[in-house]
Image 1: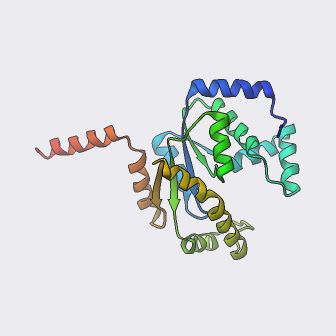
Image 2 (image 1 turned 180 degrees about the horizontal axis):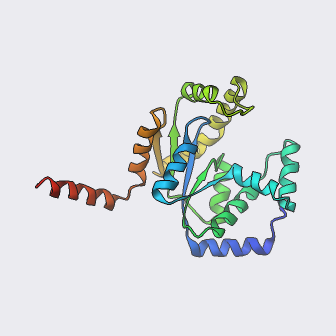
Image 3 (image 1 turned 135 degrees about the vertical axis):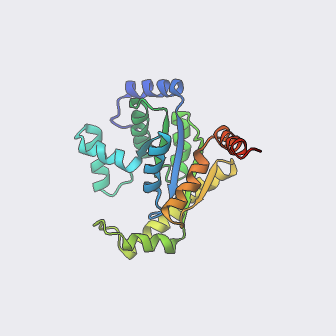
Length: 220
């Protein structure tokens, strides 16, 4: 399906992406798993750029561009925005950033998204950071937070859980079969969750240097 994204820009972006070779980490977790909070921590401590697929779509709509109008019309008509539209927005954001490390939050949402992202961009994620949390805990968090979100009611929450389980878990299972899933117990307190996240993002050589430093300082 064609979009209003300029074809010449698209070709240039694909070529430039192959040269840039960005490091990409997919961040997945159910609603209320706390991935937004942890993404902010990762950005602060490890220098990644956080890209939210939903935020990019909303920003494109707000821009008033032809592409944004098309996206708004689709959403208004209850039509799912084609994955190629979201992928082009992600490509554009990656190329416009001076960074080469990216967290992609909330995407891919299903197997079709995953396959198309790899096919179009040529990028395989370094790994998938999966925030694993029980539905009971996520439900408790969503109902207790006071952010004025109209979708934080019990019926809508349970529908969102169902969508996540039926769609995103296929993506998680696929990458798990490739040894590319890093599962985090997201039911723990925020600080403990981030300690587990830090262990994932700290390079092995840094861990070795830290251990050697501890041994030397103890006189071992």
